[in-house]
Length: 75
Image 1: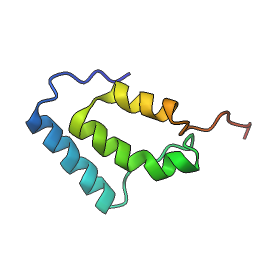
Image 2 (image 1 turned 90 degrees about the vertical axis):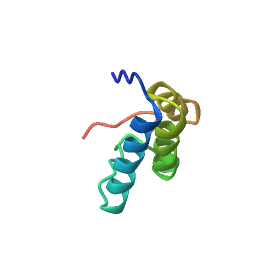
Image 3 (image 1 turned 60 degrees about the horizontal axis):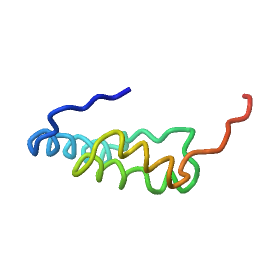
């Protein structure tokens, strides 16, 4: 589990820069557990969490907005 402490403006700016670099290089991770809506909203939520919130807020958004698949079938 994440445990982000001391998320000051400098740290948040560095996080956003890393996210944007990953976005531009096509290296944003999209979980196989995201549903279609989750895939659409992930990047925006990730940036919003880095700017203003934390990992708990991000996890809550995924759950509360139904952005994960309900179950996974056997492979």
